[in-house]
Length: 184
Length: 360
Image (cartoon, rainbow over the protein chains, first blue to last red):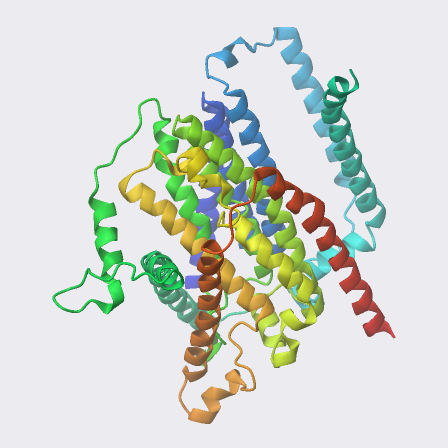
């Protein structure tokens, strides 16, 4: 008898991988913006399933909570309120030069990132982050919290300040128009 | 995961059985709640409420009315409005039911069963981040409502869905924040461990962190769009809100999603603040050894949790027929100006007190 557990684990991975590829394709191919957004939600949800099958439940939960649950709702809101029709989007065309510049700069950005992080194997190389070690160290959430609040405390705090700045900026922009009629 | 092949097979079969039982249980909630929502207000207002429908001469206090209503809903004609976004219109009820059912799978319904040489947990999915899992999936519930309102091609539906989703997004924050203090106190995100830690009456979350419980209770009503926060379907203003254009079984599906959502939050309230499946002054986990039968503790624990959840379901109905509806600006200012700051203060205070206790 083949090992039942391995069979299922592999089956789950291939199922998720196929569905994710299909959904990602649908995000780009669909003509209707709302359809693209909904497929993106499903896509991110399935991606979380893939994380969960790798035993990193914390990342999976955060992935759904932040991306599928919060950010994509706002995407959907904006698309629905603007009521974009498929025909209106056809006007968005890049010239060959623009498209070429965009693609080249994107590739350059990717190469920069890959080279920047290639040598960086913080904590990965020494085997302290494989599933068994994480289990003995006190579980997923504990390990992530320890890494985030000790080794990576400065990037973590900087990121929260960045987000705070964005929130304040959004409020300032939104308040601007309201004050003018009151002053008159 | 450190399981042998045999254990894996047992767990796999057990999961399928548990899934069937929980799904079957959840499907019984809407009929019972519809009945309760007619009989309880009738009792409060000194009326009789529906008590006629029965099979032959057994009327069972009008409980058969729900059966009749269910049959009526399923066999009604289905009308799809013209100009609706067809695919989304049909999908929206699914989006609304799916998260509610998925969350219900993570609730610990009783203590672990030690049988067949392995430990069978009494929740369908046992994850070490159970608490986060519930919030992650419940944040998806907003899609069903948003898509339903938009796809119906009706202005009342769209307005209702916008109100509902804005409300759900706003109250998700205090709901999550109100549960952080109990998580800090019990030191785990695993719901079953949180229940196990509440093994004494005075260790219940409601006594250790009363402010969290008040915040959770308010956010719970808002998150399920129930009175006094039922602005999404304020019938005097919006006809029926996001499900105006839905008929027959799809309309019933929204009901199912709403009632299962209420049940899940009731279970969560019992789990985090009232000891879940723990019975005061009795060690539930020892009942197996005491009686000599496997599963006795599971049955007692499960019934206890259900009784606690029933109390909250009754509270939903009680509040609905007692308190008038809020205005929309009152709802938003309550959420953002009072509950979120209070929640933040509560988190910081709890953390400081805990740190002082542990490191002194």
